[in-house]
Length: 52
Image (cartoon, rainbow, N blue to C red; front, side):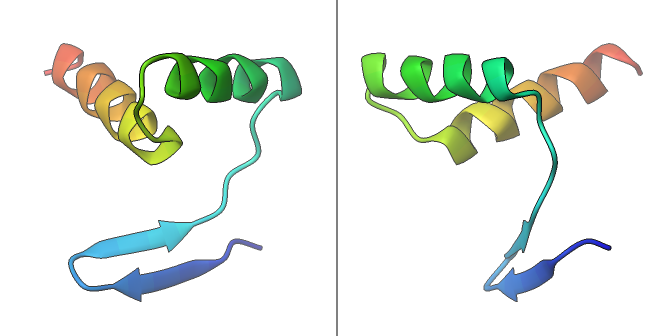
């Protein structure tokens, strides 16, 4: 079961990630003064764009 919430033009959802991957992403966000959401959006866009 997944959780989805629409907020403005964005949708909030939950995903399961490997613990170490999430830890690395959070550290990257802190070190680069960005948000975890921004990292995930950029990564997903990059992945999908590479599949065109």
